[in-house]
Length: 208
Image (tube, rainbow, N blue to C red; front, side):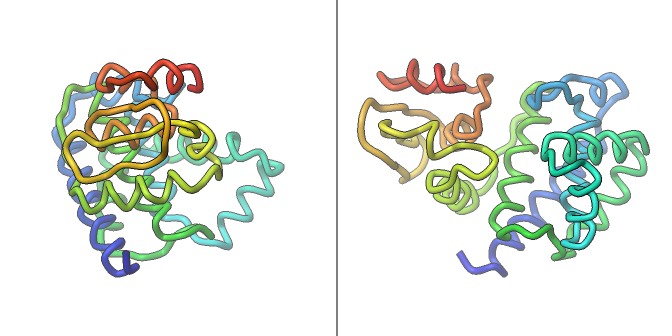
């Protein structure tokens, strides 16, 4: 997928995320997200941190965290979350047309907003369907990479098949389900296991 198309999907998903967040109550902002230890507000802070990131600032903050990536991401998420919902919304809305990003492939930014958007919406019972083209691109990216997420190792020896899109990968015991759920399972989200079926689900679950 060409970068210009990737950015189109990123900007669209960010704008839809703003719409979702704008309608939340105070209790909803405090709801635990699918990201362990983070509330919806914290996860929104993380989304904003990625959207505002630049290579120079990335390295500065990573060095300050002594190259501990989990510390680096947690600090940024909580620092921005502390600004409150209205500021988070305002600043995220301003990132629906920008193309700055950390020193990572642009596709990683699409994965960020797709996955973390679901991290927020699912615990709140909000249904959202990212475009199939975007989900396929993210799934194809994750299946080949162990960077940070360990997706390639997690699905090794399994055949993943989307029930709502023309997408499959791998060989072995099958894991079938909606493509969005398969993407989330590749990143280790146990909450989507109930959406999946097949002889490979138990193996996948054991790797989370």
